Amino acid sequence: VELRNGAYPIAIERTLKDEKGAVVNVSGASSLTIRLRSPTGVKKEFVAVLSGTGTDGKVRWVSSSANDLNEVGTWRGQFIIGIGGGAIATDDFSFEVAIVLESP
Image (cartoon, rainbow, N blue to C red; front, side):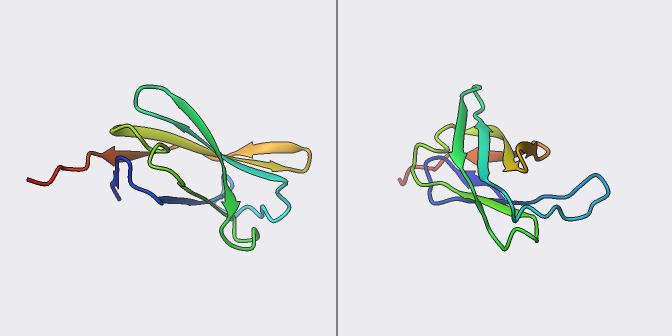
């Protein structure tokens, strides 16, 4: 899926799995965050939410502004889950943000 520069709302969802591929129960999470790095290296951090019960390991972030994904190119991301007095980080992932073509 290719995202468009300045488009919103955009949802990014991940299912957390351990090294054996089993879903990680995050229902007891005290905080959920997504960290993003733009193509030019600008770091952004936003509040994320459970997108299911938490027992299914699904976390989600929905952009709320055209400025959230405001650069064209390859972005990197990672969810951080505060749980049990510590934090777990997902594997990092990448996605493309493309330009919006102007009308003729």
